[in-house]
Image (cartoon, rainbow, N blue to C red; front, side, top):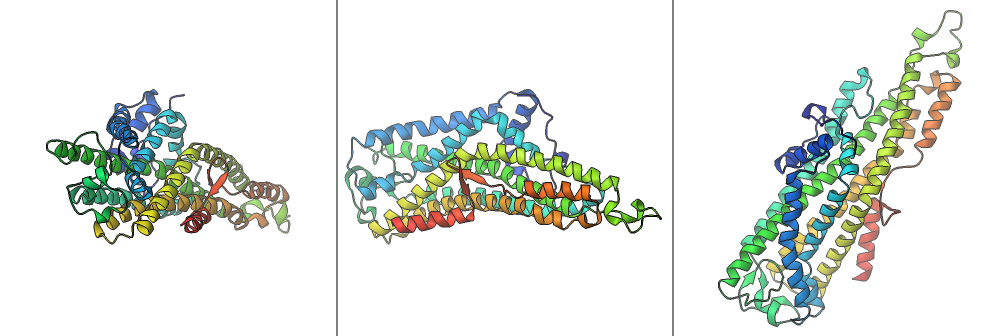
Length: 412
């Protein structure tokens, strides 16, 4: 990797909050890697901690399939909790092995990523603040939701140990024994001291670590996505603001030849716009390739989550509020995450498609044929909208979300 300049706070686009990244050490890791090429100790601790915490749980779960009895209701309940850990491990793998490409995408956080003329800076500042407000609310809301959900799960454990060890069918029918946080099985007497207390503390660590980092790394990935949307929005505002200064360019002898005027400033802006559009397309392609496995895993696990939850509600026929609340928390988080990815991709798709209308809103009709041809070429290049993909080529947007929900409804 070629070393890059660090991203200073003053370089960041207006209105974007990076407090979450700073709080968990991600921002320092980004700048350390950009300037030295070395992977930060903080990221290494995140990865090592994730695998140290989740590995015993995964091993014991695999062993449980040969030790205790399962049916469709029990296996879906028990496997609901490991899914966030699987998702977290996939994100950490992607983050670790593609740091070079991903941290280069953070260039889109800079306010000078594309050229902004001086006369548009005030308007652009307001647009940045407006577009980034949504991103800030989403990231903070995701973190707060996860912290709130993990707190409720820890304070009110509702997984029956007797059910895990000895029963099948609906867990609501089992009224005896002690409860724990997660649905995992362990090769010890789980309801006896000190094993019960050790398991309880271990599952608290699992819940806090995975749920918190899951929200943090969602913010890490989502902020870059929304920054691309912000840059497309600003670029569209710049294109629509292309103006031809007729009074400076017309000579007294050719005042009627408006189509033949030669306005140097607007030509320079159009040329810079062509270069910036090419830059946006290049970064969009990099982001699409990087996010493809991330989006594929997120959508896949989201579908599994929704399917497992539907099986529990429909087959379990449970009215136990504790079970319903926990299912609701898991369901809502996963559904919101899938929805936000589709929402962000749709915003990029719309903003990139609107570039054609932005060009049309400029004063192209006052310029000469040379300018019009160049603007037309830019319109043609903007004809293909940009969007994220899953499974290499499947477009991800709000229509995708609707298709997933209909598919789930058909299966249930």
